[in-house]
Image 1 (cartoon, helix red, strand yellow):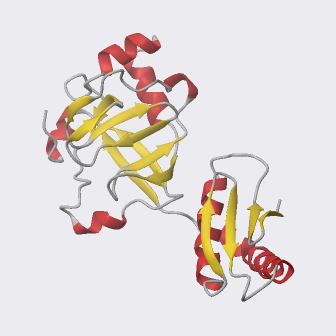
Image 2: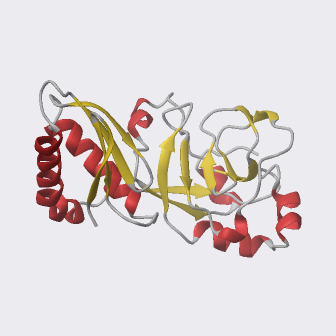
Length: 227
C-alpha cells in the first residue's frame, strides 16, 4: 500500500500501510532516511509515525504534483531494496530473579503468572526499537505480549540500578544508567549499555530488532553482573 494525501499547503502524508504492525516501523525508518538523503534540498521536515510519514516541503522549489511524483518514484523504486535489507538484531542477556527484579514478586502476583511463564512470554519475541529516549541507549521496545502489559508504578523510584529491565504499558526497556523511573523492574542485564562505552552511542536505531535471552545467576555474574 502506498497512498499520498495533502496535509497542508506545503505538506503531505505518506501512508505505507493501513495497519500498525511490527514490520511497518522498519519500513518507516528506511524510507525516512532515504527521503532525507535524496530530497534534502526540497524537504523542510519529516515526521515519522507508526504507519505514515508527514513531509513538509519548500514551495519556492517545487509544487505539490512535482513533489508527490518524486516521492512516489523514490519509494516505488526502492521497495525491493528495502525488502532485501535486514535491520540489525541485538541480543540482551537478562537475569530474571527477585534479587535484581525489584518488582518481580509483586508483578508475578499482579499478573497471576509464575516465573517460567513470565520469562517465556518476555523472551519469546523480537521487539522493535520504537524510539530512543533521554539517553541514546534508552530504547523503547515493543510491543509487549498483551498478558505482560502493566501500568507504571504509582510512585516512581528515586533510584533504579543500571541494567534494570522494566515493563510499562505496551513497552519494555533497559535502563542504561542508574536513574529514577516508574517502570516495573522484572530483571537485569549484566551488559554495560551506558555511554562509558563509546560504541554504545549508535547501539540502538529506529526499527532495530531486540531479543532478550534468559540467563542464570552464574552466567550473569561471569558477565560482570552485580546483585
